[in-house]
Image (cartoon, rainbow, N blue to C red):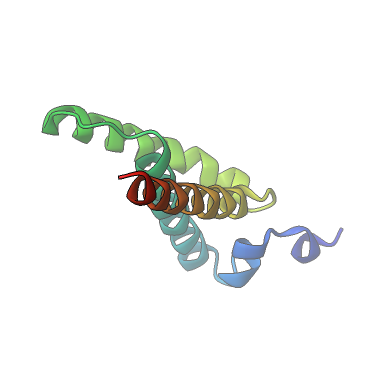
Length: 101
């Protein structure tokens, strides 16, 4: 069974198969950062500080489960694509608002 060939891009980039502890922490950090970016660009609203703390805490806890899936499934890659699409959308929306103002 070729486990190394089945790893996702980020899992193989961080050498999860050679250094599992370090690689999983790097993968977890990548997923947390990308999930926060996607949340901020696509779904965040102005909320009080305590509600933001609760939301980001639950986001970080949820990313723990996603990290285990991300070893063999393209979770981080999907978050990266979502972040890029949302950045392009926000940029175009900002340009459209400048032109209409």
